[in-house]
Length: 438
Image (cartoon, rainbow, N blue to C red):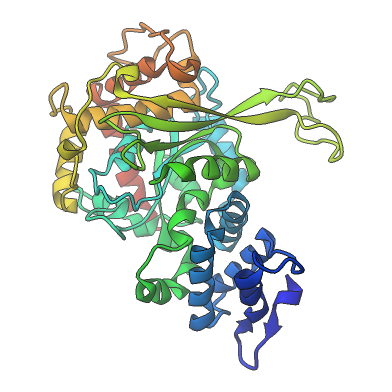
């Protein structure tokens, strides 16, 4: 990368050689293609405010027009660069919290989870991923990474700040206080401007460009607690991005997750029809020679030249509401999304179990919550003791991918009907207010 950078007279660093390489790289046989590492190194200058607005806009534009911003390796490395520039959270503190507060069940080990979409699908649906993440926090530790709306009427931050009678103080939850929030709550919202302060340097350029750039794709790959994430679901707005994101996750070391795209080019699991899915599966590597027991003190060490302990496969299949035991609902019944205040009112009605069975928004949320439970692994359990209201009757029927999607819905319904989803939100709200004093 050093060969592609040159120090300017001022504080900025010139990336003119890299920009030229990106422009001609695919057409000049004699020129070596610009690597993902080089692109990520250039992007990291944005977070340090060391790139001029002209070169910053040129970089974003060239990545878009050449399609380099849709390569798995570029997304993986740029996502890593963005996380490295973020406010750093104590991984050790979060590991300890997961050990103490994580509710192990099935193949879920009690780690942190995220449920997020890239946005930009043009449907402006109800805030389903944010609502589903709250419902899922009744059984899982959730690290919801999000921001205010950019292309819709109500982003995840907008929704949370519109909750009545008492909204969370999302700006108070920062890297320093996050562990203390998790001591009181299974849920935390990681407000992007707080955890990614370097993004403020590129905001004016993005606004003036007026088109979606690589930063509109990197959000789901830039969760500040990535190193502690056990499972995730990422929604993408175009089918061709599905395998790209799945591969980017694999490159970043993810072992459990699923990328989804509704057939309508929706960045959620669709309530209207089929959803394309790309699932990461952690399979034991038969060629591995080493400790297989997590209690073994050498479990976390390995010979870098040896075979890995496990191999990550990517399996593709499709889902539809019937696989969850639910009816289809046209997207017109869950979109366009309303303004934050109205969506927040609907959120609270749902959490207070005031939406009737079969309500389109309720089913939309149940679908996406159920998938999070399934991918996290809690639905692998043959027993169930969630608490008051759980009849313990596990639904063992499997569907696409050999997974228990209907059991996920059973658990999601319990979370709403038992009041545990609402209680989880209330604990987060109180923890966020307590964080203002820290």
